[in-house]
Length: 215
Image (cartoon, rainbow, N blue to C red):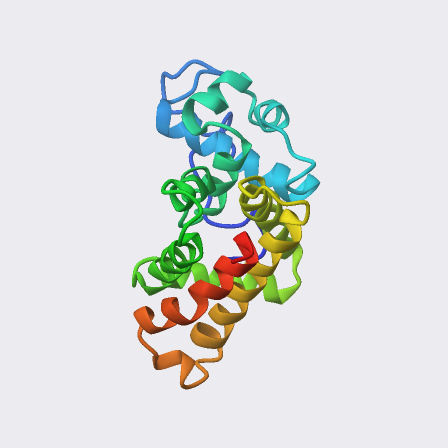
């Protein structure tokens, strides 16, 4: 993934007023696909300019020249717009509730299995590697991703915990898992790189469980 969120090939929204087709009235959109692309282009621009925390659906809509309700219609809340704009391979809206759906027992193992399940998917892994390398690069997109992960993943995990140090516990989980991802998928350090997923889940799951639930 490129570090510049505003990069990438031009879409139907780029130069919209200049590129309307013959016979199309000025100011009229060419359809749902054009509108979606226009919103995503605006979202990338706003996230790059203001950061994740400083961007709002209303601001994205203003830049795109559409009503905020249209942003919600196509993409939902801000975190979903960010997922779509960066083409992230997971949705925190679904991921965290799914991990806790069966209660706190064995939640560490479920978190580990979800995490490695994403990384082991051959279609998803290249995108995760691009995200991880972007974070490590220190460029403009790295701050956005870090901000997003803290707000939408770590904080979501923390809200599921009934402890005064919930944020620290959730952050420790993130540190543990990201360290393993870097070791296994970027450095390819043995024997972690070639160990089967079941063994990794069995090894790290209890540690994540202790971080999250204290047992």
